[in-house]
Length: 205
Length: 205
Image (cartoon, rainbow over all chains, first blue to last red; front, side, top):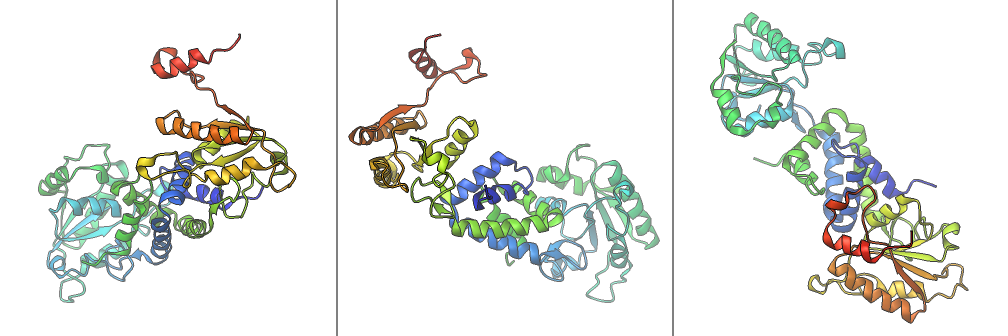
């Protein structure tokens, strides 16, 4: 029997995280029954988004533009704090706390030689460029303090130490968010008030 | 601030059932980070599927063709059983049991005057046409027995009675699937109405 369009839909919906055959089936029927219009809009946005959303040239945040909203925000470029996060979802978690108005740098991972993730994959040369700025060029704002907001895992610790070395050689102060984050927890799951405490309680690294 | 493509993606993913803001965010980042190719294919399939998948002319199952796979299967058209279900997911559940090789009729709901769902919305005139066939036209196979596989809700009961009347006036036998203790279920966990059904539906051992 030839695969029907419906079967193809159910199969491909399973590329979404946490979606197995049963959920995919429910999603497909739900869209067909109640949400044809919304589903079609979703399809268009997904197609455009996945084709056009790339990384910000400066901070590696997701954006469809050359520089992301945060890097082009003049209030934020005057701020000399730079928060380093592992993922864009961690960036969103810090952002939602409302206690940080500096800029970010997204690693998209952690040093993990066993998985072939080295400084190159984390864009650390790009980070060095950001840190090297003396602030004379307005498109490359000054960074005076780096705040590490990495997960408290082994890889996160290794990455923190690696970045601390880069900061020292560039004469940039380095701090880390306070241990208030439960060890073994995921940054993106933390509630906003814990995240605020973690930001305000940052300590010399 | 203008809505970015990413925000639009996260918002629109929430049209999927059971997907809230957090899950939608996780899905969007997951697709961007790991599944661009698969996500793009999903977008295309969704767009095509939602535009092209309609209802089978005969049984109201979902299909992109005029008649669905089941209605055009010659082994199934020779079978004179017709199973009536409320939704395509119920059809899939019956189908997965592997114990039914007749055809189906999908109501896409239950009689519910308060929600404006009457016989018209359930396609009951279409059902009457299916039942009226005397089997002389090969494209309209004979139906000798209707099996009701509706949910045991108030609306399901009302719908069952309505359909039973149609069957009687067309001289078609009518049965319903057995309600009783689920296989693998604990007797003490069963609700009283299921227990009543199980007792009344007892069979010679």
